[in-house]
Image (tube, rainbow, N blue to C red; front, side, top):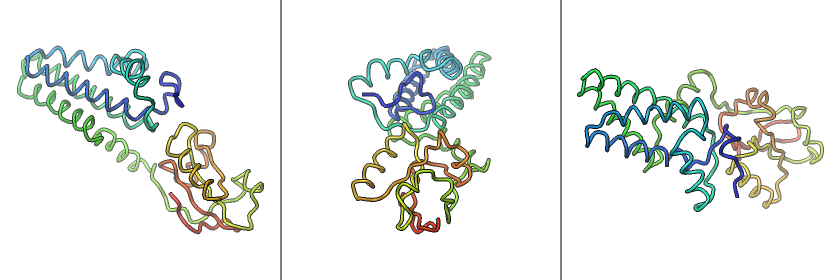
Length: 233
């Protein structure tokens, strides 16, 4: 069963979907080079543009994955959709530039850009190393959206903490409702008998900013006075 609807819950995505999309783009870009049919690069750029502007229902590789592949393999880990979306934007720009250059008969540079996209897309598909995603994360850090060391948590921010009591440590876990790793961490901690207070970063973005939560799940052990005694995850 799906925990995230692929067409409504667009802030997250099945982590296998971007890799499937990259495999399709990389393979077709190689075919374009081998056959000399450069218009195929333009069609790939058009598909990326439609998916980015009109949604996943307009992206043929996305539809293929969500309608044919995912129902058979099951849903993979759910992740933030912003890094792969940015990677698609980078691919759109480079493929668009390659198509324009090839149309203007600058074949060497045009095919070089096309092969660059093919290589990076196939690298992401086979190894999971997405260069565009890493560029997004680098840009986020440069913009100041970066993880900070948490020394103290204001107990007044945690409405549930009173229900657990503050005589002993509680685990404060910053999570997203559609994050697979978040659910797994919470299950493990509760199975260990730990008192867990969850903070939904989608509903409480101000707390994510306040404590510098760049990735979920982030979990810390908090003492009775709000001092962070250990980082759990």
